[in-house]
Image 1 (cartoon, rainbow, N blue to C red):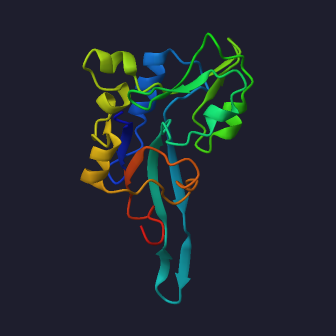
Image 2: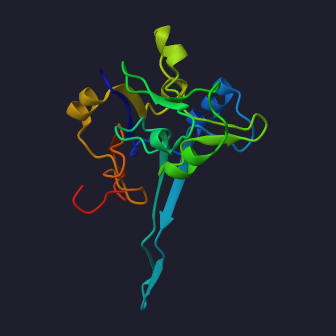
Length: 195
């Protein structure tokens, strides 16, 4: 099995949300449902220095994230109907819409907020890595639509060899929880101590 994963070069992400819009369009998602999300993170303040004015200590960056198709996906054992499955060939985690009963336990279990609930059909769904496009030889829409080329995909081991093993940044849940198949080049302000 060649486990697929995402690479995010956070230092290139401008927060344009082209990846979110392309994913919404491709999957015909309703308002409020986003399989790929872009978060902004801001912290800091202005420190007043005597006779020198204000010194900014502001830090801000963006981060694009979807399902991480985790090694130990918390959504799988949480599903009472067995609708959440991990493909044995490529490690992609999907929700079988014919089996899903809309219990929403996968939503509560996922530390990354990946599964989304559709109130119109009473079912949960999530990123399926655009497997229909990959079977045609195309890239997932989030990868293809990013104007900064900040998102890549491929076998996770190859991505880790190329970009390292950082899979957590400031503000994210611990990667030790589910072992996400994600590699990140962090923005300078997003690095955790020791990363």
